[in-house]
Amino acid sequence: QVQLVESGGGLVQPGGSLRLSCVVSGFSTSIFRLNDMGWYRQAPGKERELVAGITSGLITNYADSVKGRFTISRDNAKKTVYLQMASLKPEDTAVYYCNTLNGRFVWGQGTLVTVSS
Image (tube, rainbow, N blue to C red; front, side, top):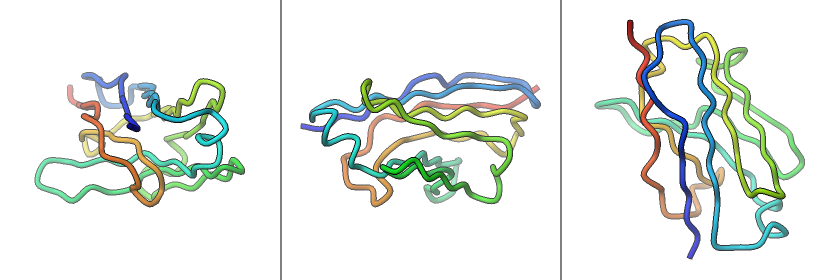
């Protein structure tokens, strides 16, 4: 059974940085590397949205709202996807999740990011 475990969230002041990690378990690294992965977020009262994606070929894309501030990366050997977040804003406050770009797997618990002074 595939599991997605996100971590790294917390309380940070506006302008601060955080690095999120998502460890994927339940299949081999050879399968993991074939999956296009993404980071999503869901703010209170809003729909879940895709904020960053990275393909198996390491092509990245970002939502306009985070472009230039967030960086997605992956370590296939560790079956881990990262999201480096900088210049955080209060509107970045949300629960952050990872999954494939087509939401293939059961969603994990997510990790809460709160940006507040």
